[in-house]
Image 1 (tube, helix red, strand yellow):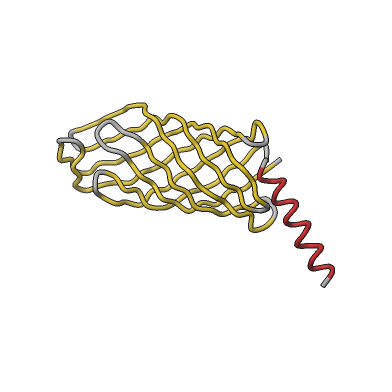
Image 2 (cartoon, rainbow, N blue to C red):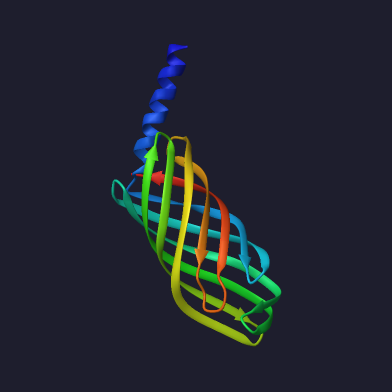
Length: 164
């Protein structure tokens, strides 16, 4: 019993230390709500903790492919949506729980049969991760990507590995 408690205490201490890691990266997947339609979204992210309570993160999202969608005043077919973002990420750790917000800019691209839009706009989000063992955390997040004629709301689950 003592060994089990000691192992759990060490695991909890190492998980808290990993939350402020210098380098981390992971994968995300979930649902994108865009222009009244829902589609699966997948992405990757990487970042660094430059200070104990603040970090910088960048990532790529494939926001999905939409067969027929009304975007602004246009009816579009076969539209693909993707974005690349960079954000400041303030966070706080409560034991093995890592709670964060993020805000920054994203460069998105919407491509359809007769339409293409490349713009830069703001993005923001919130989320939480739980360190399940060692440097690995799993969590959930919400991110909003502002766009010219409509916004993209992404609800996801993510897995992240924290290094250094």
